[in-house]
Length: 404
Image (tube, rainbow, N blue to C red; front, side):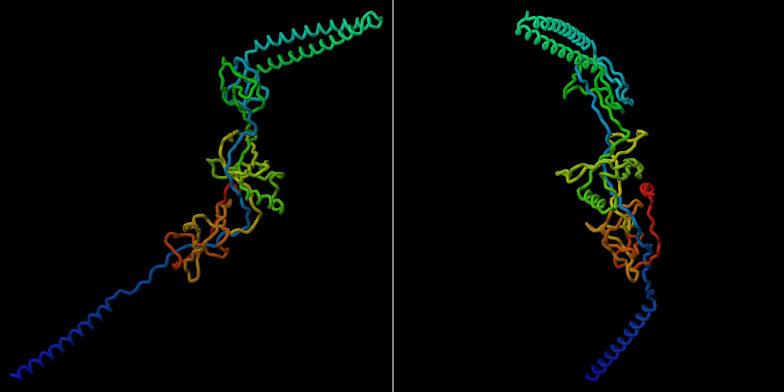
């Protein structure tokens, strides 16, 4: 019995060892097969990008403002006398000349007043002649001693009163003539007239601050363009003028280009002819005015526009297109090519758009940086890319053409 148990145990051990050897051989074979069947490692393709140096050239900056056109001269036409409106002598919206009759007020009451004044003048003139004749006789009688001194003085005073009465009568005549003249309401300036605001047959009030508004006239050639600049801008212009880097605004009439709301480009050219005499305490701005010719009548009072004029001396500037500039909360950045073809993000400080359509970079970018031009949404800092060199070019605007 003991012999049988010994042989069984030995046989079990032998079978277990054989099984382990076989399993090890199977695992070794499977591992070798797996290594043979594993696919080769493929390195990822580098993103292809275009790079270019930023535009670096000597420029002068143009400051930009919004404003509104106003007539160079504007008049509200009101009557100087009250009466019934008899006639309107213009067509609404036409161009009229200075002195042209626009409205006629019923003249009959004023002709009657003039007749009365002239009659009073004639009566006063006759009275003066009578008192002078009496005074002349009094002088001869006084010399002969036939008239007392009191009577002489009375007749002398009567002459003075008659002379005053004649002057008063003359003033009434002049006043009546003036009122009769005022029955014809004439254009005080040349320009475009608005519509008539009162129809014939209406009673109008005249000669006071609340007189009836009859129409308005505006002079639009030349026309004015008003806009406001900040106190900082004003100080910069004054300092540039004192340093001899640009003309003085108040004296030399700086050129201004203006763009209308439906235009692309600053095609309208004028002169800056006025700067206000004080800074507004509430807004911290100062008002400026440009004057423009308007022979074709395109520009109308009340239109909005955008004005530009030189705001700096010449200097070397770095410029890139706006679409290359990214935003990260309050920061602006540009992707450039770093060492080992890695993408580097640089924070930049922006200036205004230049006339070539490129954005001026105040700080953060150098003239030797290779700026990445495309695939900006697919790359990020630290990514290795495959760069191809290109060249940046600005798009010349109508303003740049005006500078040449």
